[in-house]
Image (cartoon, rainbow, N blue to C red; front, side, top):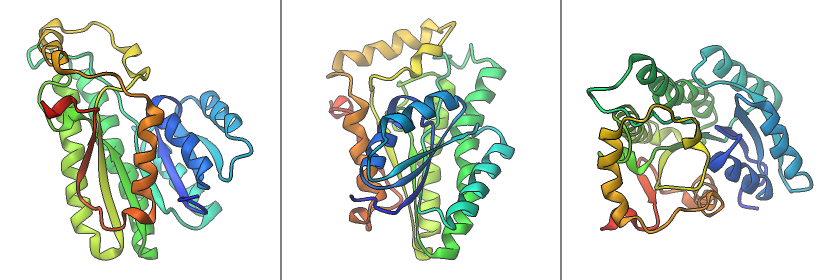
Length: 252
């Protein structure tokens, strides 16, 4: 019950890492506003966690839409009066496009979700947190936010941006009682790659060189406890930094 009575907004909650976070946070007692574009999958998450100490509140929303962001945050404030934790988890890949092959529409979509979505969600909640002098923001980056050859140009650029945003937010708002931390997962068994089309083999061939040092795929259920720890009061002195969870992939 590390998260008893915490009011949490989680984006990208309908699958993969977000789905695993939702399941665990409900078990740990949180009231979790689960945000994603596919509300049917959010309803499945709610059904799966019935009977747990916390609860899942499905809420349809697209982080690339300012209107959706404002609605999700305002409805949460109206209902619960505060937001204790924001988890910016929504993210997409970029078809592994290299600099010479990157397409504007792909670049803009990845930027809008992976970076602008994080900014908009943070902007929408942070003044409410300042008013309460309390809050935690957890951003999902990637080992691609720390190393250059873990995705295409757009994905790597955006995940580096998330790491930088975490540092800036964490330091700027530390004296307001707010922590901002970042998780950099390695490769986990999720469906994020299923929508990848028209792969740029120039990037993919280089990326595969690193899989010589790849230990194994992680299970999202193995990653969710890290988010629960960071969201809890046990992590009160962890701020403005990025924690890698990749099974040792980048240790070589």
